[in-house]
Length: 257
Image (cartoon, rainbow, N blue to C red):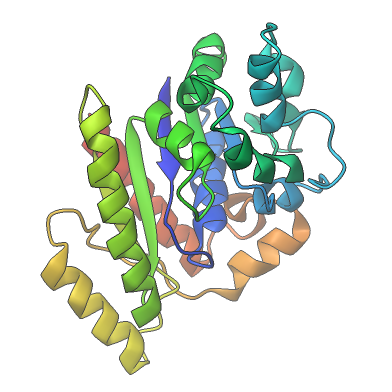
């Protein structure tokens, strides 16, 4: 089982779209895929028509069980997405309280990793949609994953968020016992605009070794897919966005080999 985390310490850079698109492609290619929503806002949970404000079973349940010192089978938390081969471990709003509890509880940084170990025989890939803030949830995702994907919108403020993310990555790597490969993915790119062109130039100059050479373009079909509750590869398989995510996935699989 391979675990990929999709993270950036800035919101609105297409983390959820990237997670669902890559997960949908893997499922379409016959892999068994688990999507994990670590973001208390629950964008990916809402994508598949679950309400993060009212869910009783979610990622938060893993942390509750740890605090109560009781065992919990993570299989009991899984939800269907309506797409064959694609399963969801949803988020709930209660996850937003975890950072306030962190000082009272020990061992909170490896809870997700332990849960995923119990699911290792169930899935080929796990894709984690991360929150945009450094805290217990993001630390859990980075501790559990063996590939980090960093979507970056091609505009100035998103580049500032990337600086914070790379600083966080350096801190996390000091605590990990093995390296964490990372790939920066330019997203929401509109090469007709000067902002996109300039941002992409900065990325190529400053992050050459980490940067995926392609771009994810602005594509309204990706937004339409979210309205339908279907992963983009199942909603609009021939769209520009899906073609770009297919190229990204092929790149990631070659790297994994």
